[in-house]
Amino acid sequence: MPLESKSAVHRRAGSVREKAYRHIQRAIAEGALAAGGGISELLLAKELKSSRAPIREAMHQLAAEGLLEQNPSGGMAVPRLTRGDIIELYELREALEVFAVGKIARSRVSPADRQRLQCFVDEILRLRRELEDGKHKALDAKQMERFIACDLGFHALLMSMAGNSRLQKVVNDTRLLIRIFAIRREGHDGAALKSIQRYHQRILDAVAKQRPDAAMTAIAAHIQASRDERLEEYDFWKRENLLRQNVATFDMRGPARQS
Image (cartoon, rainbow, N blue to C red):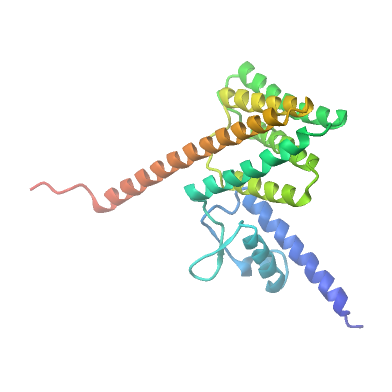
């Protein structure tokens, strides 16, 4: 049986590494690997029927992108964002997306791109109307999937229209980190959908009318509102977590003895 050439070995290793990279990224994005949880290189290698080397390379790539981090024991874990991390990520988003939207608004937007953006805006409006016509106060899991798809689609299309692939990658990676590690108690309610839909419409209208200042102001306000929502969720989670810890400590110690 002939031996594999070095190039064939490299191609196969690269394919396994890419498969492992996508597998881990998807598991984090879907919540199968929770923030703060460790990842076993050995278990992944068994699961993907691979040697550990390409798994390790994939994990290092994800660590470089901020989706994994080194834990004190030397292994890898899914990071948990701090309040400061959330603020920094939104500062980065605001700086880059404001610049990109200003650049887009200084040139003519094609009718096709305008229509695609409008479809994303209209989908949020449809979700809002579904909520108003139904019995629930917030979007369910499937509706939230639709919302996330059109929200990401709107912003991703805008960034692609800026014609800067490096900027687009950084913004997409930043948005992915925020989405993966966001602490959400429930789906969006009608007020949140109304606010987001109006922001998106304002951005689209300003871009279509070639009004860069208005477009930049609208997207900055939109990102700041999203940041404030994430910080409110984080603060709520922090308070609830502290309360649970205090209750657990009390239960372990028991009530104070009467003298």
